[in-house]
Amino acid sequence: MPNATASNNRAAKRGRGRLAILPRLGLVPSTSEVVNGFLDGALPAGHAAVLDAGCGRLSALVSFRSRIGRLVGVDIHAPDPPLAWLDSFQVADLCADADAFPPASFDLVLSSFTVEHLADTWTAFENVGRWLRPGGSLVISTVNRRHPFVNAYLSLPTALRRPLQRAIKASAADAHPLVGSCNTPELLRQALADAGFEKIEVRTTSNLAHAWRRRLPSFVLGLIGDLAAQPFASRRSTIVAIGTVAGG
Image (cartoon, rainbow, N blue to C red; front, side, top):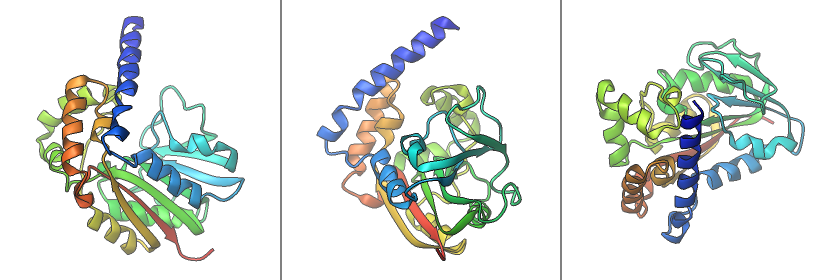
């Protein structure tokens, strides 16, 4: 286990070093910059109640902790080990457990690369909208099927895709089943509107090299994909969106 941990740490360090080239190649803004901009504009000045929906080991919300009074995580299984930056955690399925939280519980919900795993995106958005307070916002990042690499990846048979997921992800535990039923800018915007969200803004970013940075061959492949799609906004690999519940 120590040797595996050391190897993972070295891979993570090399991956971070590779990211320095991306701005110099014009691959800006980054996904994190767009997400952080949406969060900064949507979060109240202080004491916000926030839900991280489908939270992973890292969250953009940590940078905004001074403005968050209560930070709750939700996913279909509890994190192991527990996430120290959360105040509480709820095991629930966004697509099925409409009563996981009382109505109007949160000022903001963040969904980071969760939408592509949802079996029923439209119901999940309706549930999240119910949990948000009037004027509250849902911020989303997810993959874009209009990028040829992403579409090919999502279209692979599960038996072929799972080994690729395990190679790309930080750990095998992160390789969740993929659905991708709502993963184009147009479909995502429509799903948010159908769930009652307003003031919807949808942007795209090039994120493959960043996501695949841990191993040099996958980083190079992701970089090629990012550079090819960067001039075509609708085909960049990642969608970042925000929608607001009426009122407030």
